[in-house]
Length: 371
Ligand code: GLY
Image 1 (tube, rainbow, N blue to C red):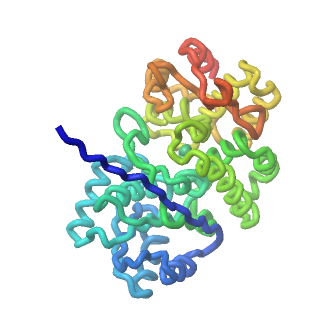
Image 2 (cartoon, rainbow, N blue to C red):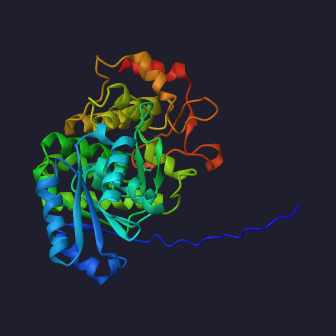
Image 3 (cartoon, rainbow, N blue to C red):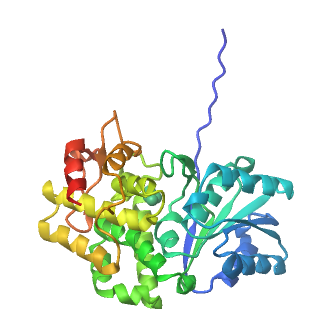
């Protein structure tokens, strides 16, 4: 017998910037020229059919004008494209077009694009650099920041993926002007989540400025983008790999993700998260983690924004309860939830060791029946 000891300790520097502003393509090109391109000349611009013409095409042209080789790789818009087969289709197209390890992925679009393209970048050639150019509020608030990438499976959302940080994120708030109002409303759910769990000032700002945000007022959109980044990255910088604290970013997602899948994506992600936020608030008030008045404030804010707070009739309640068990926080077959503490904080359990606690099926069944 012999043994070879492999010593592979790593120190990784995944530091990067999130740039928030308007019409950021010239800034992006300037950054590439100043070293963000990692010495790469071949760019794969991955996007969906919604933003291909308006944003990804012009970015591709700007890259070519700047001397890069760039091509568009487009897939049909919608959550149903966030699957392994679409990733495979994009990978095969890139291989066919001669993309090897010396390339960079530029994800232009919303959350589906950043999740799918980021996962692709993390596995393509065992990992190539990528940039997120976020064109929706949902991506700016959550999906494009923090490094989580994934695809959905028939069982549940986001079960297969990587934590793979981008080289830079651009949050171009000017692009929100072309979003249908329904998608601005949808995007605000993750922003409400951040207010609930980590920023009472943001929560109060949302209560007072919903209309300004929905009208894409520059100051209001910049304010929420900065606060979203601050809440999220304060957590991600402490627990990037979700060993414990990062679970709090799952607030509202236990019921949210389950209902999104059971609705077969009839509910947008933010709409599903909104229902999940209302469910955790009701459950939290029962456990006295928040007052009834605070619970009402959360529900009122979601309603005021135009988000749903009750479970649509077409949702099969039993299927929803069964689907809760696909949540990644489940341990030993038991459902676990994270809870906000009052407004702007999170509950911790087990002497501060854990941020999620078990909830019995009966208890969540009662909340679901009430909703
Ligand atoms: N979307 C939750 C997280 O990034 O951890």
